[in-house]
Image (tube, rainbow, N blue to C red):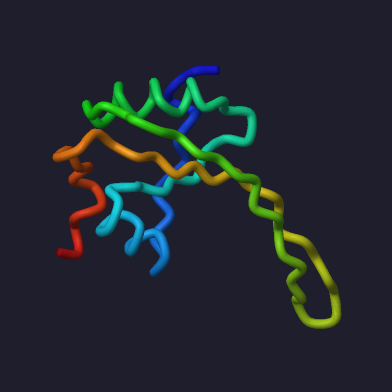
Length: 96
C-alpha cells in the first residue's frame, strides 16, 4: 500500500483531545486495509516523529435516515498513535 493513501485525516473529538494532552496519543482515520506497520511508516515519513505504539480499531458505520429512507454510513478504521516522549505533531496544535 502506498504511504500517501494510508492516512485519511485526523480525528478531532473530546476524547481524542484528552488522550493527546494526557498521553501524547494522536488519533487518525486511516485506510481500512492499512496495517500497523504501514501507519507507523506513514506517520514517521510525513510528520518526522518517532512512533512508540499504534493501536487500531474498526468503527462501525451508523444507520442514518434521510427523509423516509434509511441508509448506512460505511465502516472506517481508526488508529491511535503514541509518540516518543517530548515529540508532538503541529497539525493538532492549531486550536491552542
